[in-house]
Picture 1 (spheres, helix red, strand yellow):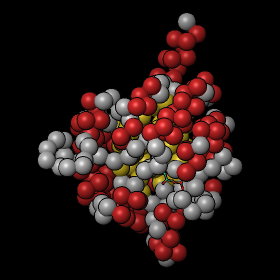
Picture 2 (cartoon, helix red, strand yellow; picture 1 turned 90 degrees about the vertical axis):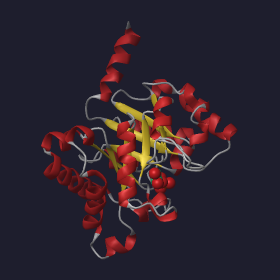
Picture 3 (tube, helix red, strand yellow; picture 1 turned 135 degrees about the vertical axis):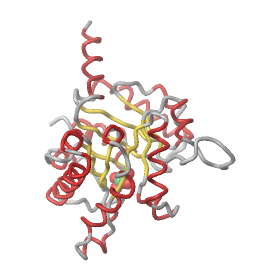
Length: 267
Ligand code: 13P
């Protein structure tokens, strides 16, 4: 009975704004190492606080291996997918395939894909469409490079990214999108946006979404912060009113650090 109530309470997380902590493992770890992290987290599933949804994005090759990570404590995500559903596209995986494997989330538009794989806003928009066609929730990444911030163009850069990738959606579709603000200068550098910088941009993103889709949508959309989140800075970042959690890279590769970050989202 206790378990059922707990389960239902956690299931409710799917329908209201709450904290989300997502771990992006990028192209790291052997299968054996990945399993060690997954098992360590799974063993501590009861430490995941109520009201916090945890998403794990391992390399796609390992998704089936870590399927034992149990909802509603942990949800799985891909790190990318094709904008095509099926076909002769060697090396690609599709949203239709993720759906077939019951993978509920997919990160899209990460700055590493924009930079190293030349992904354009238009391509990202069509990947968003592919995910929504197949019941996969996109975790859409946006964020400016250092030059743009220095030139005070960070708001316009992020606005353009959001407009081009998301503004063609209906309000119902937009409600399924999780936005991750990841300033490129903060990714993997150890330099984190200050709490004020994060809050300011998150409030701007929420307002921009509200201006286009209406307040009902912007009030419930999740906006995560990513870029050198660690166990020492996560609590203060997540306490900012418009920061609904984090998209964590390096620190998600250490089970203890990641669990500390997850727990800090409850405060
Ligand atoms: P780091 O946490 O390693 O800076 O990476 C952030 C990120 O890119 C998550 O997608």
